[in-house]
Image 1: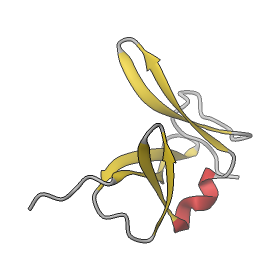
Image 2: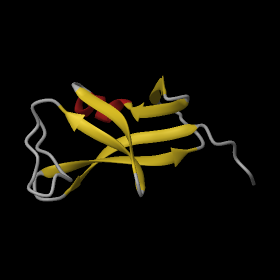
Image 3: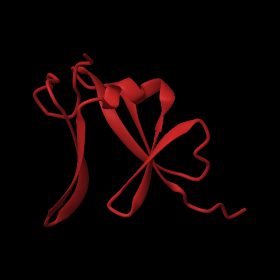
Image 4: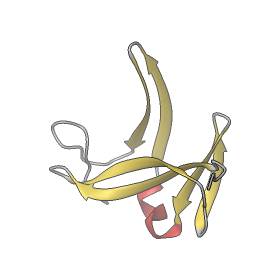
Length: 88
């Protein structure tokens, strides 16, 4: 069965040395999520992790050879590798 691509699901997961890390994955069925539109793409956030996206900047970085979306949470303490953060 081919499902239509709806956008990307943003979330958080326990990981790294500081506790949490942001996640992004394709989503076909965005039930029970909050939608926002940016860069011509639909992004969805589950209501239960919405508080972790307060004061977060999502940015598209275009640097050869990698293009990526980066998350920056104002006031968050990052770990040494910069991949995880402490929740508020």
